[in-house]
Amino acid sequence: MSMANTESRPLLQPEASPESVENATIETRETGTKTTRAAWTVVILPLLVGIFLGAVGTNIQEVTMSEFGEDILCRNRFSPVGGGAATLVANDPRCKTAEVQADLSMLQAVEQTFGVIPAILTSVLYGAASDRLGRKPILCLSLVGMLVLYATDYLIYGFPEIFNIYLIWPTALLTFVGGGPFVTNSMTYAMVSDAVSEADRADIFFYIIAADLSGNLVGAPVTFYVMKYGPWFATAVGYSCYVARLFVILFFCKDLKRDTFVLRNEDEPEPDEEQSNKGALSAAFGAMLNPALAIKKAYSACFEIFRGNRKVGILLLTLLFSDLGGYANILFNQYIAKRFDWSWSQANLLASIKTFTRLALMVAIMPLVSQLLNRLGMTPLIKDAQISRYAMLLATISSFGIGLASTFYAIIPFLPLYTFRSVSRASLNSLLPSLAGPERNGVLYSVMAVLDSLGVMVAAPATAAVFKIGLHLGGVWIGLPFILSGVLMGMSTLVLFAVRITHEDHINAPRL
Image 1: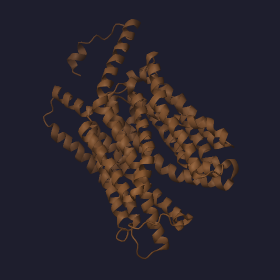
Image 2 (image 1 turned 90 degrees about the horizontal axis):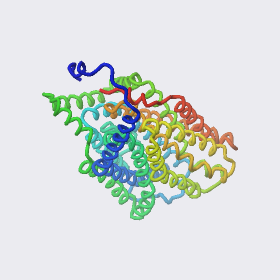
Image 3 (image 1 turned 180 degrees about the horizontal axis):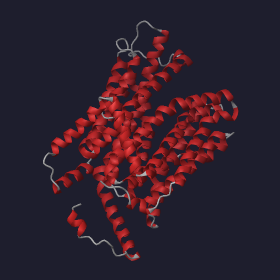
Image 4 (image 1 turned 135 degrees about the vertical axis):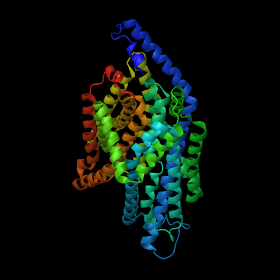
């Protein structure tokens, strides 16, 4: 802002009347609604279609890679001579022994750990680059990186006589190109934040979760069908879903962040914009080639966000507790099967109730509640804060209920409540940009991706160890992972209620 403009402004502004404030709020809400409607065709719908395709592809990929891995590990253990991926032995009962399954579990767990390392080192750097270059180039780059990773994995699985299967561990580091799924998610949320109003942002985040759930629900029967034609046919279908997602984003999704940046530079022309953009991207890639520098820059960006708004920093820490607590959900089927002596198919049927409840929440109930609160005059900032608080409280109660339940019927009331953890996360994803300011959405969501990565890295082995302890103790302690989950999510709940959010927090949000 120029000095002339500053000096011409009166030092004491006339106090606004309640009527003018209400009219301004209504006008802002109407403008935001129009903005959101315009963004549906050029941003939101392509992103939702891409998320759906990615979920279907991931569902297929997880099954095929598990079958390939099980086959190779089984052959290595019982038939070390000869073999290949062409003749599968998945129906051989020896491949279901504890030894082979333990090998497969270790193979996948270590691969997942390797996979989060690039996200920890590069997420913030890619986020900073997206604030300069726009979201779409970084999103497309992350999708390309995952396509390269999956192609390399399938090459290793396809030629086990040439490649050692454990090469998939270092191969996971290929997501240094684009940052992997964590950067994909952060860029998706950032693109939505750039395109829609604050009042509608949480609703779109609910739809994003619903699109992913829908893809998983559709992906299960699709996987069952395509696997009848063999795992390699299923692999081709799954890989095609990823390619289709990249195609949709590349040709049908508009980058409003980039467009805004271009328009701003048209008003204030910079003589060397292209060189500046190249410099920003080369600086980001240069940092990625130096892990120590990447960590330093990531910590600097985190510290900058924490220093800029302490409430944002404190709320970000709740994500880590929530992620650590929510990881117990992965053990749900195994816990139910062990606790009540059920089959895996029976436990999976119970889990499907939770999935359909979550889908109903995201598609119908929560958007309706959000719009109702908007109509009642609640500001987006306060609305998102309240939803995130009470949703996390319900999820905490549910986690304790699932862990302590002694009968199947005692668990039923808590299953719908457990899905509120996702509601709290979506609302928090909408709240934090309003507190931090709109110009650093890329870095903010990337810091959240780093915390998610750290949560996965810590939670995976920790949850398995806690479950092992619970199995050893027996009885009610079998539910120890969910009891601990309740404790961690309870800590998040306390912090969410302790941090006081007011409308002035939005007014005082830093702007660049």
